[in-house]
Length: 373
Ligand SMILES: *[C@@H]1O[C@H](CO)[C@@H](O)[C@H](O)[C@H]1NC(C)=O
Ligand SMILES: *[C@@H]1O[C@H](CO)[C@@H](O)[C@H](O)[C@H]1NC(C)=O
Ligand SMILES: *[C@@H]1O[C@H](CO)[C@@H](O)[C@H](O)[C@H]1NC(C)=O
Image 1 (tube, rainbow, N blue to C red):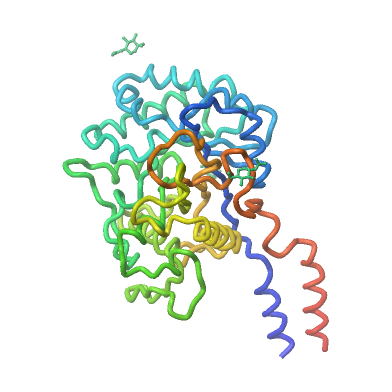
Image 2 (cartoon, rainbow, N blue to C red):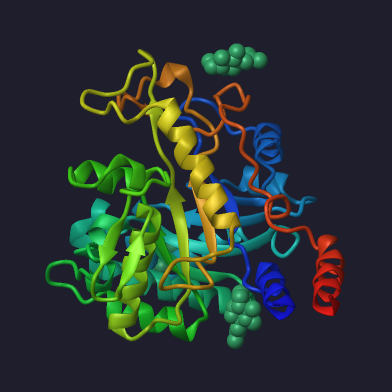
């Protein structure tokens, strides 16, 4: 009996598995220049030290010089082909965006393009040479710790996500991309980057209950994968495990997964109402998604097929775009209003949710006490 208690308490001990770092994407509003103070304030409000720049900007990178922030950089899509064609273009990009700051700024990764196959479907063959040129140029500069990869959108990269165990990479027409890319990621100890929006999949698939997309625990909110016998209770795990299955089918199950974008839209400017037909783009659902996501990631449970979970997650995005920009998308993705104040109560720091290490001796003492009874 007491032994059972002991085992029970040991099972409560925080697993040695790491909780993924939760960072945030900053994308510059169209009309105003980025302000270092604003970005620093946003990072403090969200209690995160992990920033992804959708467009690398040396002035932002410089502002992180005396901070602990780790930085994820993105090379814009329009530069992929020039970099593929001429390595000196890669070198000159690195001289502008990396060399002046590294290693005083902790630049961890570079994504060569973002959803490049979606934006430049005819230039897909340039993606691997561009990645290789950036990688080799970094090595030539003596920089070994910055990893190079490229972000994909989930719906483009993954075919048949239901059930997750049936998922595979979807090669672009006429191209062979994933095999050689995964071999490169494996050889260079890099991660697979994926933009993963349960919101988008939920909108594509009317049969998906909203509750699964929003991390709502409910007896009827599940999807079974009969091949693996796994019952999924949230769409985020379904999508991550689809990526994990695709990696496994391709023979690269050890390549880590980084979620470069995820989020849930709220209504956009200027009307304050969602775009036509996007009633689910509202602040209430966005808050439920964000809280559910953060709680799930901090639980350290990983996903059914990936015990250690994804390595990193970047939420999209830090600020609402300026009210004036009138992008017309009818959606806003910010975790903070454009004036910098919080929309939701969120805390991305890794410390707060799981058992505090201070409680460990107490737990041990208590279980020993039970054992002695
Ligand atoms: C590559 O770019 C450099 C600098 O812009 C230029 O001098 C060189 O001629 C280019 N090489 C090729 C093969 O286009
Ligand atoms: C691979 O990356 C991980 C995490 O960044 C690091 O801890 C490990 O030392 C790296 N391994 C090699 C062989 O570089
Ligand atoms: C910031 O903007 C939000 C949304 O427009 C508004 O509700 C809030 O009052 C503003 N806060 C400040 C301090 O201006």
